[in-house]
Length: 188
Image (cartoon, rainbow, N blue to C red; front, side, top):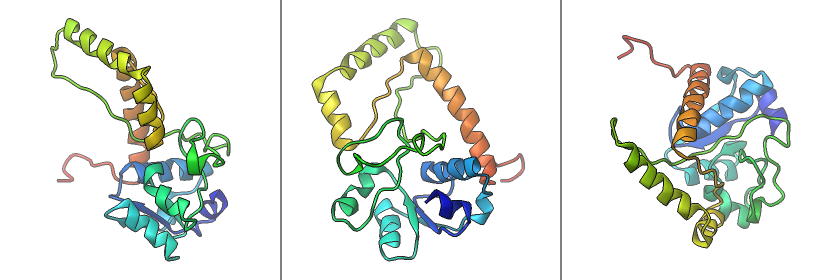
């Protein structure tokens, strides 16, 4: 797959919008390979199942999608996994699928969820929520939830989350610039 992207010969299908996480992952991989995004033909669909169907039909060559979205087609043998952007290998149908890192591509990316509050929130309230959330992370039910959904656990407390968000903002700004999706003042 990396070779077809390098040559600009792969049509890439993804969902749901230009500039979403799937598009950013593609941009990150292309940037590492030294391939301008403008040379990669992309097809954007309203849902991951439709993007995957595009590849199954032979119109797209590869799809960038969440792991969970691809499981049914992979289990049926209609698609094969090529690589994952998780920090470690996933289980189930992805057990033998290398990570980007294993393939020499420094791309560890996915979606994440966070808990936020209004400015000026008292530290005692932040501490209570941080303790509650940290307490859930080590439970058996949390582990099952991660496994069942092919999620990677990466809990961060409030301070580390702030650092992560700043680094993420900087990295995503670069990728959006590569995709020519950064608005400037007056772009309306």
